[in-house]
Image (cartoon, rainbow, N blue to C red; front, side):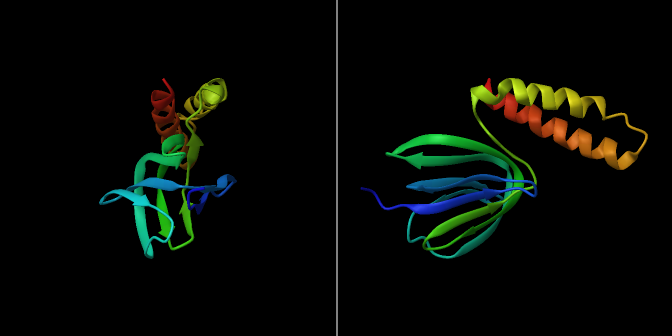
Length: 132
């Protein structure tokens, strides 16, 4: 059995994933960061992009994040992100419905609501592009 590290991807509203994995590759602001068990301590800002989760020497799943912060150490990888979605064809309809809701709010009278809706729409479009 391969060594593993604990991965947690957390948004303000939920824990997207919490599991043991062989390796994680995250979209660091200065480039991709691969994290294996017994990794040295690192804290990095993250850009919008894919988190590749490896098990059995293959990418077992992917999560799109909209930037954030990663803390990597010998036993775990913790990612705090404002927005995150699993790249999963089963979620496509739910994501399309979310996109319609956000798009309907883009011209809201309250500028804060409109700006947030635009950010969320942009992110969901990026996720849907990855799902295909």
